[in-house]
Length: 237
Length: 243
Image (tube, rainbow over all chains, first blue to last red; front, side, top):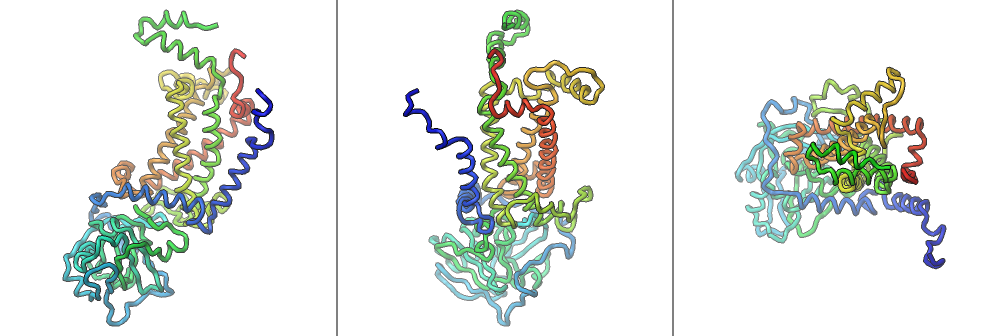
């Protein structure tokens, strides 16, 4: 082989290639900022894969009462120091790209078609639990207020110390995505998000905002409490 | 040199295409012990498996229990015990999940490339455990290791026990991917999740597979320490049989 065509020794030996790859990985994979760099790029790729896999007709299986989590064992979840309590005169504010923005009282919401199901809950931590939930489908609320087709995202805000999240439209409009006002046949308790919380089959628990105050139909995603701290935005199951 | 004539003669009655199998067998006999695709897949697997195991243990630390809320599995001896700090990667749950779901793709791709290579190159013949061919040899090798037998049985590249172990890791790899997908998308892939018994059984299976991988790795490293030549072969490829 002519000398010029011979690979230059030391330029790209196996060792430098391995060290380079290791350095690149270390720099691009920052566990404290997992939504940036290489890990962030892979999250966006995974979100696209999950979006492609999503089928609006696929429902989570409804479970028998025998599968229900024993009383008291369904975890409570809020980020405030104590159980958040609804302010006096609570009502849900609905806005964004809708024809009829406004506020709906719990009674207004309960006059909309009611849905109920018992399905498995999947938490980001790895546990699962089962309860039944009843409320109004988000898609029925969207129809009620005339949500625009340009609203590709839905934002949910709460009175739990600013906890919020935003969803892609297909997941938000899934047949099992509801604004729940009841759990296990009873009105929702403050420990589980009263007076109104988001419940769904197709997302991890942290996407299901409790203690709702606002639902906004928006053209752009608006992050979320945990999403802004490093958890995945799509978080579909 | 080659026993092709004998192979052809003896296989005539079985209906197996004699010429084809003869070429394939001769081909394999003349190959280096570890062709480069096998070596690349093996060494790429090492950091990937370590990343997946350690980030998986960090994820487990967020809820170190098996079984649904309020109904922990009675058979699991480590309920509530998080895996040790040194075994984890990703610092916290969100970090570990990002590592896990980023590098899971590469481990899967590596595994798929390896299996495709085995299938297309014919290497599966001297590596996979075929029960009718290898059971007797595996038992004899086991008897030798247990000192119930004075000498090791004759073997080609691998003995029956090695073939069983290496084929077992492929099964483990497939199970870890399938159970991992069931955990990642238990609703969108609900058929897969229910095939594995549901979300929580799939989570238990995912951890059991990791434990078996760890067991394999310990045995694998011990055997390599006892037979250092094999480590050299996995680096250089080893010598061709006629060279």
